[in-house]
Length: 89
Image 1: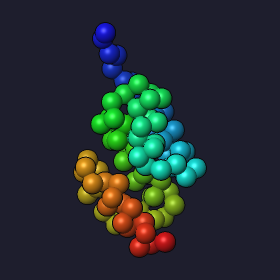
Image 2 (image 1 turned 135 degrees about the vertical axis):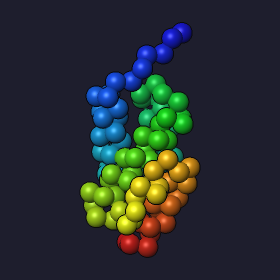
Image 3 (image 1 turned 30 degrees about the vertical axis):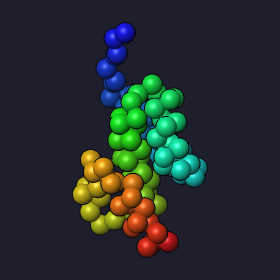
Image 4 (image 1 turned 90 degrees about the horizontal axis):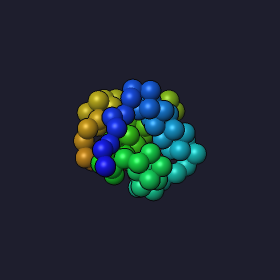
């Protein structure tokens, strides 16, 4: 079975979809599994989509940490941002 490469438009679609799911209140772990299932990608790729979407969602709501770029690509992105979120709320 060969896998097709994901286009830029599909990446954007995944990202926007994940932001909507976060804004609707879906949990990050649940969203990671759901993203992998829905879009047919690995959990690692799904985690990256969810991490970027979480940062975007926080930026839109004004709850983003000062240096969001420090969280991108980090395996602790969800924990780090959630820590900031609990302090802000």
